[in-house]
Length: 316
Image 1: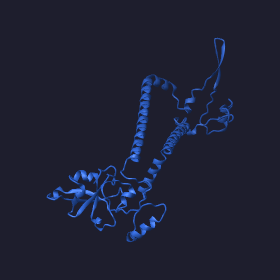
Image 2: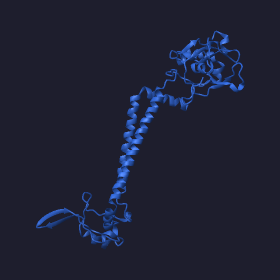
Image 3: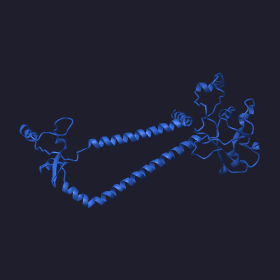
Image 4: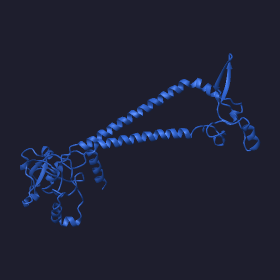
């Protein structure tokens, strides 16, 4: 069931390749946007959490538009709320006079007790920056290099995956699986094969029907033979497919030489078709004169086609 689902998905990919690329590109953009949004949210959510007592620190504003409050609010809070440990007020705007020139400047003033609430250490920060500024720059450069390396690796992997999918979808399997439907036979179908086959052929949507012992890509019957005069140590191993004459027509497999099975010839049940790889490895003369197991004659040669996993060696 899962295999049929995968095959169906790959067929749809092949038929709608452009839409697949659009969907993948859209998914990549969505993931990137999600990552950016999450980075922003985490950054905003983590603001000022480096203070040791950040859960107990509150800012009092005059209204929801401006972060300001009256000067008298500090003493008022201390008088009314004894549970408040410390309050600090620091104005943001100040007037600076230098050489008879007045300048409005955005400066933050605070008393020394300000650092009892917050964990800022300005002197240590300045000293640390002076000592380790070069190290920080080098560290940032290393992070950037790592980031670009990972990005290039992911892009390369993406192209590799696309190449593999393209190879998988465009590989010549040696047969035509388009519009071919396979399903497992039940005991009832096997007992009434001919009648079931004729019922299927009555449908205007079905052109040909053929039975297979196992579907292509599944485990195939393994067998072997020994040529005349050889010992069993030199046995020749090959794989077989049990089927019927319509098999070649259903899958569009070309017959290179000889003939196909004929349902009207009873003796064809004891004959066999071989592929070109079988001929190259086991037959030196005319393949149509080749016989194995004393009485099983080769009556035809077909094109090579994949009937096992693509990763496996092409079998005979």
